[in-house]
Image (cartoon, rainbow, N blue to C red; front, side, top):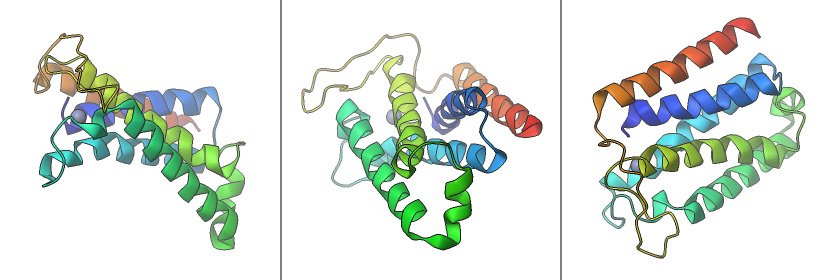
Length: 163
Ligand SMILES: [Zn+2]
């Protein structure tokens, strides 16, 4: 998938989770913001001089590691910085770590899901080089990317409109 498709897919899932948990508007923005950012991070390997595209950043190992790192950052920010404790109070009824880990994992996991359905596939179990692909369409398929993007943004707007 491309940028639009990945962000759309992440917004769709993050909005759905936010609605199910009846999060406040601030918590929705926090959750969807982190998920959207983390949904595009794996493709930063395209411009990297050290990483091959669709390598380690497209693995379950990366999704878990990056999400734990964001969870730790979230724990630090929400626990030790009193000026944003207002966010801590309203962001999720979970621990500060989970408040960061969950949307980060939604972002990275939906990225993997969005790429595993394409022809070229991804090395889900890196460092194993075996690539997994459902082979449904090309990653640049405009219709699929636009539909995913529109669905995600529609879900996000509908959710923020109603909370
Ligand atoms: Zn990708």
